[in-house]
Image: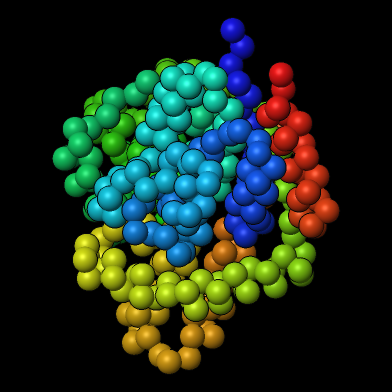
Length: 306
């Protein structure tokens, strides 16, 4: 028996993926969402991750949202393993995988390498140190595994931590382990994409940041720090990092400089997302209102296969 359709929807941040999915659900199309987003997975990181609201999730079930505590760890390996298990356990359910984090989608579509992992307590301790000093640990990785360090940015704490974890668990460089154990078990998912760029999109990003700040994003960050401390993986995410730095500098009454810093960081992140998406086989639609309606039409056509 053929399983129900699974479609991927990719777009840079602020492109309107959630709006498209809610419009699709409003048409009565039966499907559920798998969120491939590293920050939406963390509880209490709500405003800055543009997490779907409880009301939206009641209307349209989302998986991969609010799955770990703020102090917990969530990575592409766990996302892909849990998403694949969900797909296998629910063959009669249609899903849309909505991707904000390209690495997570890659882990699901390209498969995972069967590599050693540290015990959870050791892993948490390692990642906490890497988050605190990513560049310093990258330098250590450069000594222990130059091949891995060469392909990882010195500030990419997730990939630095993963390479160091494999190196320590295996007792030899992660690059050598991964070369011997290529990824297996990928899921073939056709991808649709929303293409957005240019001045209108960048103006929209600034408006989005302003709206998030008005909604209490700074209070959200303050609350996270008060309840859980500063050493949280999610506080390294775009926007959260800038707010923490702004608070450390005294948090002036004028938030315009903060909004601009977040907008610039978001713009750079969106550029990296677009670069990643261009490497994939994606059917693209423009980000205009008409283009979004066309995406909804195409999703409905593909998901409602008899």
